[in-house]
Length: 594
Image (cartoon, rainbow, N blue to C red; front, side, top):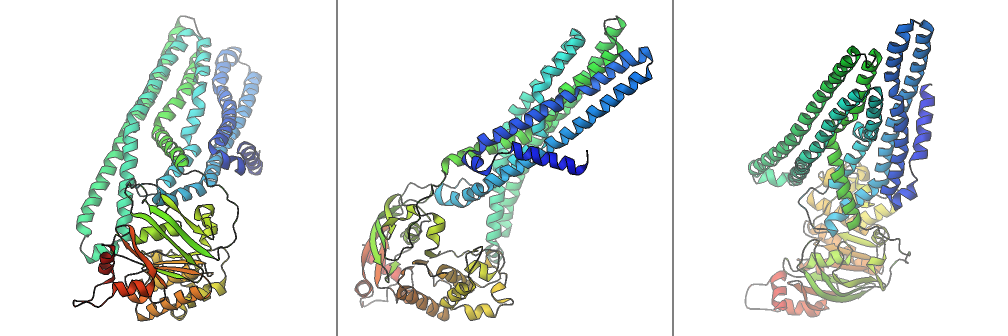
């Protein structure tokens, strides 16, 4: 059978065994079990064909040699050759189907894994890991599903069949093989018990080390400027040492048990040969039975040895599957809500209280206000007063623990995040850009961005001329996190991203923190433009200049709304003349709150 024919056979088997995307999306584990059952059927044929060598040797020693029949030898050889070729084809097909099954699992679940990664920090408490554990779990499950460890599990149920044939040769041969099998199976169980805890500890230590590495990479400038490299290097050494120690412990246990199982299998194979020789001497067996029994015993125990050798991978994949099921339970599939018309009238915040993910203390309590199209709200208050937490709830980053945020009367939970995002522009306090071009970042990495809308957003942020002066203009690659741009440039690119396609609701959290005078003027013009086109703007600020274009002010203190009203009215109370030094916005907000 040619290579093309084998490839077609593999593809047809893969397509018939692997379930469809719709079925897998509904219940991937149930669908995967059906595919594994198909591979088990192939394994059954392969294991039956594994008997070819034993019976060929039996016939040669007991039939061909006594009769000295060349035609019989040729006939047996041709038959064995055909069976070996068929076995090899099935073995290749089984391995390729498993590889494609692993690829199918990755294809079905990778979108959910990405969803887990981006939702975990927003909806769950931090577990101290690096946040990429679901991705590693998927890689481990795919690797085990595609590797020899799973094949060994398919072959394990055939051990009784091989031992039964050994008993048919002679009960003493069967008893010897059974004793060896029990020893190796006990060793397999011992491998599970002994490697479970070290493997789990190795995964935990690896996650901690990766989290420290990622945090150090993000804060490389701080480490260099403030001389923090040495102390954090010590923490890195400690984390790496703990990771290495746990990995070595797990590897030592696995390799030791694997070596023991390999030696025991060789000893058992020799023991079967010795028992067979004893039986031949007493004329209770033939020479063919000695060889066939030895081969069958080795074949019966080979899956056990292979399983022990790959037990660490099985334990790791099992832990990953367990965590994956837990995450699947925690993050329920989002329903597909009815599509709503684009918001264009009002924003209402109704008695909203906010709990950060994993926390038990409210950081925002009972905040209510309403804005109509064309209005702008400024939010001020001291640090840790709940300003940023409130706007996270407004744009849907965090779900309110109590209360509701509504756009045109519809709760934002009734919108799909992808649909809501088209009508929301958000500039967070901590600006983060993605590795790519300026145009890609402004267009939010749309698959089919509108060049005119990109330029319009850049002009609204007053960064169009600056972008044109970059080496490749809008196609300039800015590096990971926008490292090739200054802090002010990053903030204005992020502002343009927030203004892309003229969203109805624009929320800016400390938008002027890295802006110069020109940037402040651009920010003021952008807010005016949002109001003039009938949008709603919300600005969190410490600078009074950023609040020049708002018509309402909300004062926050200790997570509560302390004042709300027209900007001029609140400003007069905040900035009333006093015989002392001018009071900053934050201190004035505290005074209002008191």
